[in-house]
Every structure is written in C-alpha cells, then in structure tokens.
Image 1 (tube, helix red, strand yellow):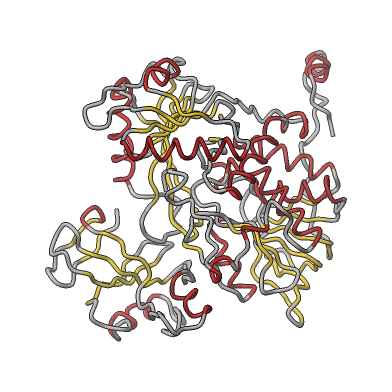
Image 2 (cartoon, one colour; image 1 turned 90 degrees about the horizontal axis):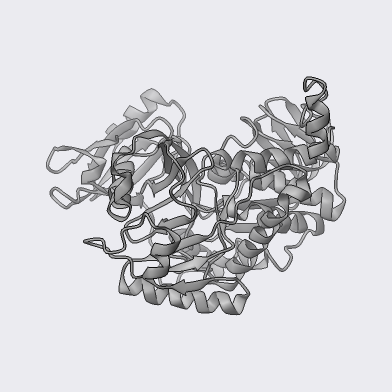
Length: 109
Length: 415
C-alpha cells in the first residue's frame, strides 16, 4: 500500500486517505494559446516508467493539496513537498539523484 | 503444423499423442522484415494475422519482450461486448464481437467463445436513462441490445438480489450476443496462425530503440540485435508511452494498474456476465467454476502489475451487496495489468509523426473484447498507409482538434 506523508500535518497517510490529482507542475494554457499548447496542457502526459512528480490531496485529513515524488515502477517514495511551488525543491531532487544518477523529468533533473 | 480436428484427436489417441507438433516456431530474428509489430499480445498478434490474411503481407516479425500473451491479454476478465454509445466505438467493438463468433473456425484453434450474454445493471434512475439511451443508439448502429426490467434480470441471473438495501436492481442493458472467451487461447491461436503463414513470433526480444532516417523509420534496436523494417506497428498497451518516447513523440496516455481476482471454484451458479457499474464490480463464472471478478483501477500512474489492495476490498464489498451468496467465498488469487488510459477513454489507432510508424494503444480497461476488430483495423492502416473506415475516427489528432469519442461516461463501464 502506498504511504505518503502529508507535508502540512505530518501524518503518514495510506492511499485510502488521499485523493490522487495527476501529474504535477503542469503549465497552464488557456485562451490565446495555440492548439498544440492547449492539447499539451490538457492531454499530453509524461507517464514515465520511473521517477515521477504528482499532485495529491490529503482528502480525509487536512484537505490540502501537496506534491509527491515517486517511482512508478518500484513505488518508492522520494518525498513530499508543498503545493505552493512551481518546481521540485532541491532537497528532493538531491535525494532522487542519490538513487537514480542522471534522472530527468520534463525540464528537471 | 498439425491441423486440429476431432479426427486428429482420435488419430493421436491411437498413437499415444506422439504426433502433435509445436503450435508455433521460435526462430532467430532475421536481418530485415517488411513490417515489424512490437508486442505479441492479442492486439499485436491479431494485427500481424490480418496483415497476412487480408493484405498478403507475410514477411512480418512480432517482437515480444516477455512471453506471448503475458501482458494484459492474460490478465483481463475475458468479457466481450459491443454495447457502446458512440458510433465509431460501436462499429469497431461490434466488428470485433462478430469476428469472435467465428474465430475458432478461422484460427483452427478453440478460443472457447461463449456468447452467454452480458448484462449491465441499472441501479440508479440515471443509469436507467443512460442505458435506455444506449439501447436506442445500439438499435441505430445495428448492435443487438435491449433494456430489460428487474424481473427479467432475476430470471436470467437468479443469484442477484434485486431488492438490495442501497442499490436495488432497477433494470439492465442486456446484450445476448456478448459473452466471454478463453483469453490465452486467443493469443495462442493467433500466434499459431501467424507462424503458419511464415511470420516470426520472437519472444524475449525487447525493443530498446527505434532507428529513423530523415523522419522515416528504418528499423529497431533490440536485445537480440538490430532488425530493419519498412513499417513498424507499436502495439504495447501500458508501455506505449515508453516506446513512443524511443520514436521521439509523445502520447496522451497515462498508465495505471487495473486489477482482477478469482474465487475458489464452485458449482455452476451463473451463466451470464453481470456488470454493476454504480457499485463498481463485475463478475462471471469461468468454465472451471471460479467466479471471475473485475476490480477498479488505481488513480495514479504506476507500472507495478499489482494494484492496490483497497480496490479489491471495495469491489468485493460492492458485489456482496448484489450477490449475497458470494459472501463466504474464498478468493484464490488476484493480479494486475498496466492499462493505457486516454483522455476520452477511447483507443488510438493512428499514424504517428514518424513516417512508417503506426500505433495502436489506449484501449484502457477494455482491450480484450476488441482484439479481432482492433487487429483488423490496424492491419488495414499498416498495409495501406492510411486508416480505413474502422480506424479513421481514432486518430491521434482528435485530441488537438477536440473530436473526442467520449466513452468515459457514455459506456458506463468501470473505468
């Protein structure tokens, strides 16, 4: 069972307590954008086999959104962090680099 | 290759079954093929089979990183139906269902297609309205379905509790020609015929790269060396994103684990397939007597082929309400498969930005029922270079153009 620690209330929640919210750090495109940009924002996903960044909500707890860094193959969790950022924090990226040297995800590595 | 028949069984009975030959060959890969199909699951093998049968392209290799039919083809709940709402979906699923009817004769391999009937329970007022609409749409599409009342449901499947406390059964969408088939046999039957036509089914051969020159495919790199080809079909379900990445394009696909389970075998108690989508569970009884139960999909990307335990609990809890007699059944085993979900829950059968590369993916939680139709349509596209009438609505460009084939709500299936 997947267990993520909510960065706000510090509770280690199992997945039944959480609501998955899909891929993290999407750049939003709206009116005025090109068809390709809008398609990318709505449908194109990284869907990696390995390191992944996601949004989650502590639905049956504090109710707040947060981010998680996770491996989609081994289900290893690298850490969780606040939703109020536009990229993964340095500390989480360092943790991933220690386990997976040379990883990359979208423009991050 | 031995032809299977009642006569062959009798003949072999007199000689201690020494005359059976291997069902398919395991050749070394050649240097070059006219077409390569990545993925020897149901869809990949069916694509290769119809390439040979309908279009005469037989210099084909089917490459599989694991074993034949070891992915979602061997991990589904074997349900076959075509009661979809949208016209393009109804057309391709109905094509598949009708091909299943004669598949055993066509392949000379018993796929044990059992048109026992598929019933989708309506347990809320909204579902009644939705299914009546689907039944009307199906009547226009030439798909044989009808909306039936609760008494008929009880008669067709006596073990259902139609006056359940939370979700009484108010009716059902009934497709008498739907049913189940033996999933492994579908893959094996296609593989045997492909091999007989001179195609190479190559297992344990992982594609690690796709080679292109000037925007056109020239071959693949594999764990067993480089192989050249003119045309390449990617038919790898949950791993489509990963393989598309090798060819340098992206897909509107997310991979999640979908799971299923079976109970201990019991005496025959249910001769139809029942899907209960409001409470999210579906069940049928296999020929061995096991109750085959389909569960929910995980809500987050993963490639674990396991799935989360709480989905099993949810599914079983829901089914016990509708089928009280299963409450003391022991569950034997559970498993998961990686399904490729698109935004509109409809598949992708499409050309790609790389010339000569074609893709068939996005079948999500409902690929098994589509295998023959999907292979038929994909083979036509690969042979002619352009999608035919069955496939043209399923192109990749529909996401950019907003031409969705929205089945996520319409089909009312458990997604």
